[in-house]
Image 1: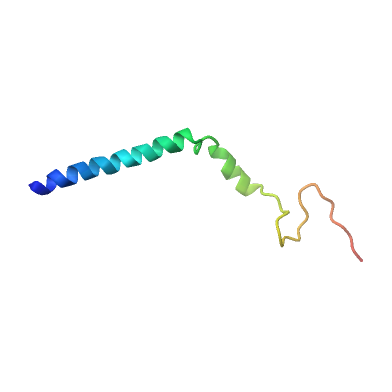
Image 2: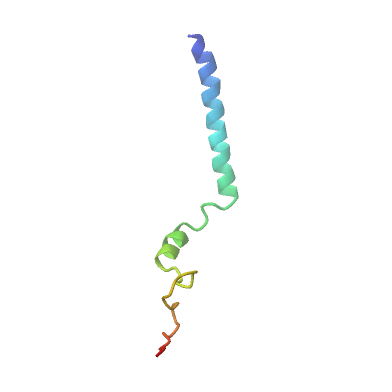
Length: 64
């Protein structure tokens, strides 16, 4: 029975920490653009290092 006197405050403290982290993430804008990340992964540019494919809008060069 005395274990509950330790476990209940620990559970409440962990819940308060989780709620605080969630409130911080809301205020810092973590959930502002939910659809943007999903669309960016589908339409990413191809101009990264080591990528030989031309970027969108660029005409392929014809080397002989």
